Length: 183
Image 1 (cartoon, rainbow, N blue to C red):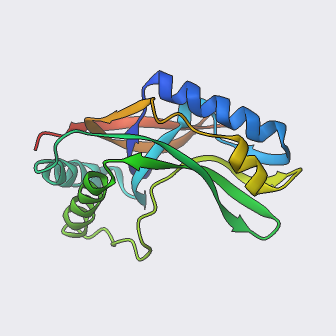
Image 2: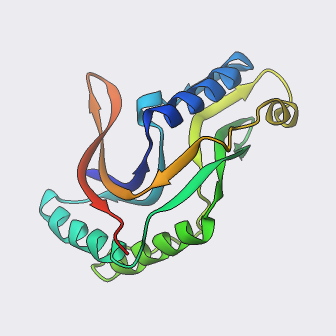
């Protein structure tokens, strides 16, 4: 199983992200764009595990969430990670980032206690809109044209263990376990 821990979004947030994504698609010559139903915020990519290990992972997620209470985020600016002439295009986040980072840190600790390697890179929370994107114009101009709506609040009150799988040839994220934040 290929799994990760994520924050899922309400439909209004996915709809807003899709409107931003459509604008990017209209200014792209190519790209592999995230399906709107797959929009999420990754907290921890775990990778390939045996199904028998999932019970330990869910226990670690529950432990991490114990001292974390719900918090609020909103969409930030458009950004990218360069990959040669193409890029990964994403939307950043604003809001209670200190609480998001606390949750991330707790997850890292709890999961490392059961043998899952810690991330070596600094956590950079973002929502991926497209991979291998080739724009028809300048990214900085496109980023200025798109102003994500910070009035659209993302309530983070639970985290989800997701399985990344293929159904009918399409990448699909299937919730395996949901943990409420209770701290």
